[in-house]
Length: 48
Image (cartoon, rainbow, N blue to C red; front, side, top):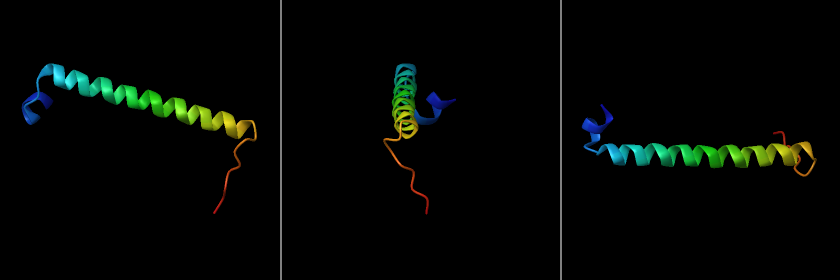
């Protein structure tokens, strides 16, 4: 379906999926680091 919609090859679709997964993993790693810093008291939460 997606390949016919945007006229992309299978390899282009696979590359896009791999990139999305890579960005998601980076986001998860960054978020985990921030949570760890909060737990250690290195970052204080600000409430509005």
